[in-house]
Image (tube, rainbow, N blue to C red; front, side):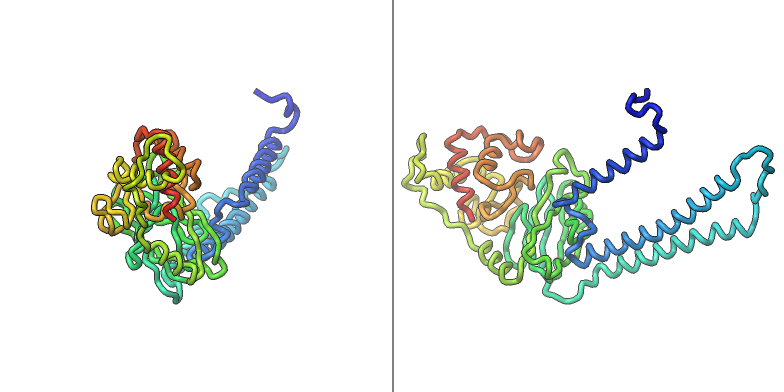
Length: 363
Ligand code: CUA
């Protein structure tokens, strides 16, 4: 069926126009979306260079092949009284040329790829920061073994340092990817991969998007994290703050009967947290819940919440961290992110208000 608008217009003109328009629209998505070509670290930069090099080689091949093809089509087209052109089937010289020429191009690309691959581990000097990256379904845990910190959804790194990411999964295959800084590397159960990357000094103060790049279940698209590139002093301050244990509020004197007075919300939240189902999956360092005081001591199901209030994202990046969103999440996590590990706990509005006040107070 032909649309009346295009009646009389050659079909190929419509197709070409549609392709040009869609590429324009797609390129407009670029503003804040992460691009592997807008790089802020040597690993991503080397990979981007390899992309451009391969694109140039491929373009040369394309122009040569299409040029010869178009020339042949036009030069030897069917015309009245034109003789058949000379047939070259089985011409040894031409067979050799078109076997060797593509091989040369492929070897050039292979050489550039191998050169880039070996160069990826050479990141120059800089102090090293080890991060154990644990992929859950569906959120990222960041464990800094040398600093005794465990956090979630936000990765903090100092600019100029070599980041050694040890990638761990105990469930399915994920893929760790920070488009502006690092390439992708699969996170495979039973086979821990290691990824080295670095953020340039001029990335200091910037925030980058990290994501999962391997389909890992229903909420694969909602497995994101923020990467904060700090200067060394800011990073050190962040480390010291994260190393502090939470101070438990005095929960002895509060009754927590509805309606809970504003002044009691934080203490009541702490009480609900400790007495409710929360502690089955979550820990808060400094609050003695199930003997949980060492962030590395337990393989918890849910994120370590010790400094929950200092994070910008919750629930694997599906929501920004603010009181309204946290209340929405606690009301029924399965509505927000179907299939995730946190069940609907049937919390009352009072309990939700108190838990929001308490968790957001954990800076
Ligand atoms: Cu994890 Cu996709």
